[in-house]
Length: 118
Image (cartoon, rainbow, N blue to C red; front, top):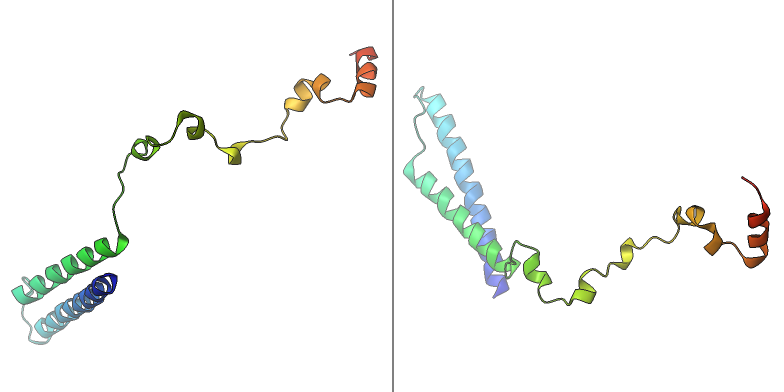
């Protein structure tokens, strides 16, 4: 069924291009005949609108099911433990080491740090 929708999109684009070309041809015809432009002929407008709707319909069917806009709708299926589990944001090399060095200094260097005066 997807190939049918792709054909509809392709035909819609061709038709939309044809209506744009017809509008340009109509404008050049009016310039040549020294007539004033008021509106496009009805057949060009109908062709442009119909091909626009055909392209939109085909693209919507090719794209698949639409998802809801609010992010909470997808997160309702997750449990509380997995909802805030973002390991890509975990940073282990930060300035927390400088704030509390007693946790990060080996035991041999710990005595040296306690004996130094600031």
